[in-house]
Length: 233
Image 1 (cartoon, rainbow, N blue to C red):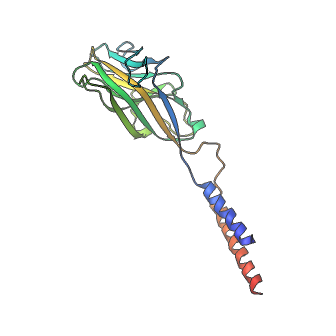
Image 2: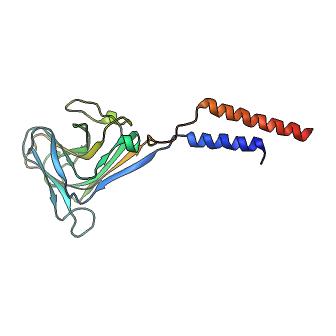
Image 3: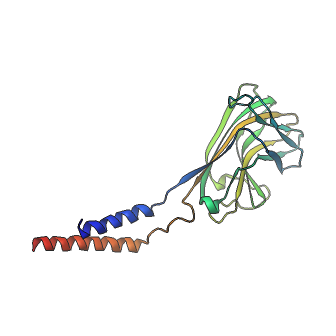
């Protein structure tokens, strides 16, 4: 192999290695073992959550699901979550966006039922993004999905800033449920899943400086020129 081609190969390899890449991290739960419900807005007990042993939408037998009941007419926002539903940007890399998907079924409902979506907790503060409402039609299981949720799409009811960067702290993810004037509404939830779209992990090899790439390109061109002169001589 000629010196020019060899140097050109190094230049191309470094260029490709230096390009940014993205990856995904999947967090999901369809059994809801160890789940609990925490108040984001309102008081503890305004909504209650419980694992139901059967009747979900995964096709198993038994088939657990998560049930949330509103017990008050006061405004309430809650986060339901369980073990393992956490991402750490300092390990995974900066978060670009999040996708959420879950199934739901009104069990005892009226009006709009529950508002729902994705809830997050970082550094002790809660954040939420509403993606839709359950309604009150007593039908079969339905799916709710929302892709491309950015940090800017989340509301911070108690202050603070959601940090998706590599400097941000670990983030717990969970199901958001909300109501006002909804005492007695009960909705079932199943197949909770979040896809975290992340940038390169923070321990990646640094990209080569632009000057280095141009220098290598120059060396490659010089090598090709020298080879041609040698062949012509």
